[in-house]
Figure 1 (cartoon, helix red, strand yellow):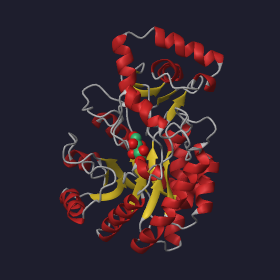
Figure 2: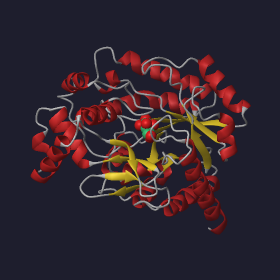
Figure 3: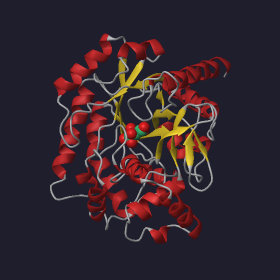
Figure 4: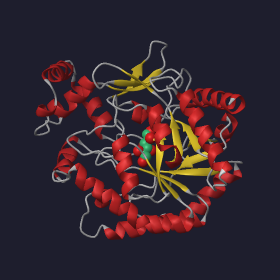
Length: 390
Ligand code: DNO
């Protein structure tokens, strides 16, 4: 597998030199300074690529080329955003950056309720706690209709959680949920801003959103085919509807429907093991087997499921997904592709998130230096063993 590392660009305190010394050969990054909806100019892509290559690394995956919400909302004039997206894709393709991660989650991207949960060993993990979520949705945001979406036990737990929060705790919860985590599509919202944004989505059902995704893919597939690009949709995280918003990349049926509607090989998947595993309905080992030929990028990470819908991000080899089994399937898939003479045999992977360890550099939730160094090291050992023993 192409061992990669997510890097947030020249302002990332974790330098390319460090990343190279960690053992990665691929870089996963984006032109984060360019707002969603604008074209990525060729010169800017070339400059970023040269910087990466000057450090002996290669730009393996774009994460993400964000799809502006105007497209998901099919706002009047959204076609011009699709054209700009096509232009960015063509520019990337011409410069040889060929795997593109994106997502189609409305309003909020990946979501947690706690960014500093202390694990028993003192390290810090990201967590999604059901009671905190209900406290936010029902009692802080006071979203109309929210109450009806939870059962009595969940509502009681949410109320208890809410009542125990002081003003600072409320602020923290609002910031954690609404302000946007690293790499999110949108820049984040205040509580009021989020309420207003949700109103714009009221008529968007899962069917409507799915048809927009299919239309978007159909529009970009020809450009991708021309340039040998592979689009890799990122699963919803967590994989279920939130805030009454539809999510359509959450389970096997969702992805089956997507690949059936747009069968082109460029229509692929980011196997984000942690996101998928956060839904009890998903069996990541079964999904990787089912979708292997569509997987062009893998986020290797796992979670521990707790009561209700809660989960905490686990140590990479100690969660509810079996990354050893998943690594075995991905390596077998690479071998199958090589034997078939396919051009894109190698699948890029990156350790996803990581716990904050003592002495860490941890500017961005989920993306600490030491925590990911530990994760990548464990995964590198695991992959080397699989390569050798299978
Ligand atoms: C979180 C990441 C997400 C991901 C986007 C893809 O750590 O996996 O931010 O990059 O959802 O578009």
